[in-house]
Image 1 (cartoon, helix red, strand yellow):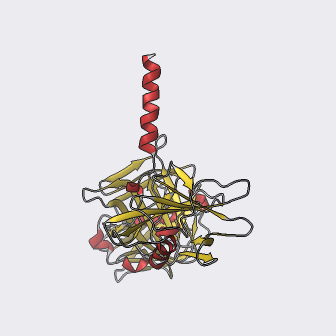
Image 2 (tube, helix red, strand yellow):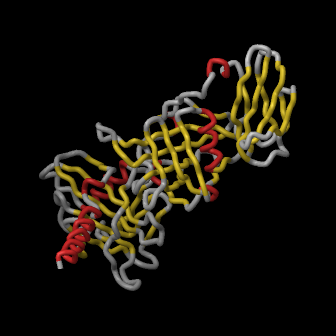
Image 3 (cartoon, helix red, strand yellow):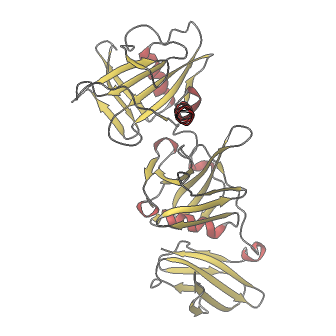
Length: 373
């Protein structure tokens, strides 16, 4: 009997710990000492169908339902809505690629004290919002019946980070992407241990190649992968090793607000301005700080060389003022695959993967990692 009670107690505690609370909300609009919360559930079959925003206001401010939606719209260009019948009927909500309108079904309205206690309520045209109260809009009124909003994802702002904040770019090429790596923890100041790299390349690049490019350029970053999943990843003193339910989740987007989960590395191909995200934990990659680039060994010597493009499709070019004595290219297994004296090298016939270019001059010998697309 005692064992049964203990198991029951553990289950109850676990459910309480898993409950979504106000502390999980990340995106707040407005100012003031009081807070209400708005949840929009598009019920469109995606794994990110439901989002939540916090709305701040002062006592006596008398914020109505339509004004609450307008506050969110004013703060987030990716959010929009439409009301009809003298602002009493919610016709449409859109956020990034999610959109639901009152054809063929309708939005149902809900309110509650938390995300587990919703009741249908017509808050759009009755009274003002209250401190600590949750207000929901859930698409689907009659097909087959209205359902309360599902547990939401904390909405992020598309304006919290952008590529213009990157100061050091890895690689060469006309296209740029960001790689955000979130270790799922916070530092002592409460900020996320989330870091971003800016990469440059030509054409397209896969998620695996993006990680290889970062790995090739900075000694403080290391990762391994297996079966198209990230197994281990470390940056400076942070690390995450996949085990059980603790895995590296993969995302693709164009800003922080529109991350989409991806099944494996091979499913992600980056084009210009695309973002690639990895998160060790349950949250989507959060607002990052730029990762410090600590270049690989013998950097003082390597600065006299320039090898581009990297990643490469056909030719690599070596720029140096030193006289070349010998150039060897090795596969990742250590097999020598080419010997040359030319500074423009055709590797078009090489299989895709990582290679090491050993450059010998009459002054020094250096080795550089490249990625063949």
